[in-house]
Image (cartoon, rainbow, N blue to C red; front, side, top):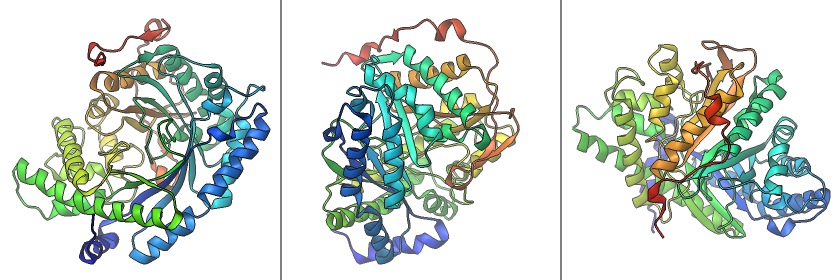
Length: 453
């Protein structure tokens, strides 16, 4: 695929006024060669391998930023699910691995390192159990380590024992980090149908089917799409979709260029472009703003799910034509506290958690960065996770929950996490209890359309 100078210049012109950036370049690293029964020795191996492979990531990203004038907001690392290493440990803890990853990230200037993860959609191994028990300590005692756990899939169904355990962990992590408004939970994602090449935090990990090392790029660009719609006039749905496709094509081309340049400089193979539109708290960088420019009076009103479905599809269609390999999550993110427009919609009473759940049927992920009352019971958290997983399982799509029960806060309060995590209102959840259902135990069977072999 050839890139013209004109394409790059055109996109550079969008950087300042339309808040275009490359959201992340993520180096995936296979850690299976680091397995050791001694957790501390394993941690040493992990540190050494991560530093060796990713040593040039930050300098390379900075050189590309300077060359093309396009910000690369985050430089990240994803690693093999640490539960795959933990099964060999003689001690029942994986926390030293989190320390090693955190130190490697700091020494390399990496923003986040992800992969303190487990895949438990069909059952929980000894290594998984060690990893799960270590999550609260790992997230509360490190600054840059992120965790994810996959509790369901369209092929396996939903592991409800895993769902309940994750609800307990979310609650514990929030309480353990109450001095920071439950911030540890912002680094924890519970997935259904997790993908192996996702470059976005906090749910990234280096999947078992990946190579020894890989570079994946996540684009952004809500501001570019918003600017195009502001100048679009009264278009039909077909014309509107075509406009979004063209914009997505352009910003994805630049992501492809960045990935190729970084691969050439580091010697690490280039993997995929994640086509997702990822909002930030900055004004003008909002998915909600795009939906309202499409004709909604306020995000959350009737018609919102249809508008989001159209946006998501058009982004994918345009981006796929510009990328050699598209992957990750690819679509439109709707992280609540990270999107100023979404927060305004909640504060206005137009958007609630039920409507957010409906929107996750057609967005690229799920209930993301949703702050809920600190006294929300574990059973209710488990019910929210199970509902979101069911949407993913039935629809063969990735869904996730990044829920933050903010200690001491109630619905209507405002929490400020700072930086890209943003601030926003505590959203109300149902007070009726799903206790008997979520505590039945076992696994919800997969849907009939899972039988495709």
